Image (cartoon, rainbow, N blue to C red; front, side, top):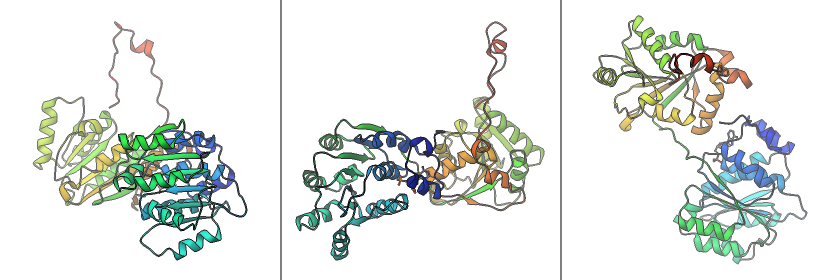
Length: 413
Ligand code: AMP
């Protein structure tokens, strides 16, 4: 993740205002990679799925580059494969453009055209459309694309799958030569690539990792808690009988050991598994967990990879993972095979920023639980307080002083 904020992207105040109204402060990777080049007028090919923040990645620079003209003419055209996506894009224009005066409308098939034509006649700056209806209205001369300066083709791969290629080509022929074109696709096949090449001029290439989704059947709960109280909270949560088989995640091996020892001391059967344990010890811990001999397995992300256990009732994130994607993998360990599952996450002040990243990735806010150890400081942490303290620099001369060998092993995972 990045430390850059939207302030570093030199957006105009009305856009900054719309972003801060939604408390969007940190650009997503695709936004960070695309916005500067788009503001300079570059064409773009973006390989990214929904959920990555790609809509704002194109809407923000387009709104910034558009100038008002009267009477209103259509300067921006966004093509989307489905009515739902077109409507969502329209909503995003309303949201990011709230403090600007541009008007937009959305047109799609499957409904009467009367209202859509009326909106066009009143004059718009931005048109979001599905290809079929757009062509219909173009053929009926209800609109013109001769003033287009910005053209976006969203979800190109899906458009091609849905057989829109001819419609798209016809639309492209009606666009002015001089324009800025943006092309988004979740995947890149030779046909998608061919289409991109006919459309783009020396484009900027931006690719971001696939978006992960959270299993719907998992009940996710969030506990704001101070770091030093986490063990007591865990102990409390483990009391009810229905928590039969609980997988607890820590970020480090050291912490996994500590948590397992703490639980055993308080009469809750637990074992830790991590990279420093022998294969034999790991297999035993896993078998004990599977057969119900122990109630809690404490694991690091790496150790838990590839573990296939079907009856985990609860996953507890004692600490958030370094990478937001790991959150999705972790909680996916419960609710296997259609069963319902529960994931509890502990968030201390220094993890607040990781939580923001996770919520952005899964596109939902995790439900906050009120509990006796609740920490307002954790809940409200911002800036450096919301991040882990910087790691101490290692003193290499000291570490290598005897025979050039490290004197102690790294304590990290
Ligand atoms: P998209 O991939 O464009 O469908 O966006 C996914 C979701 O992330 C939408 O609900 C956006 O409103 C939201 N979003 C976009 N950019 C940001 C950001 N920088 N910070 C937080 N949320 C964002």
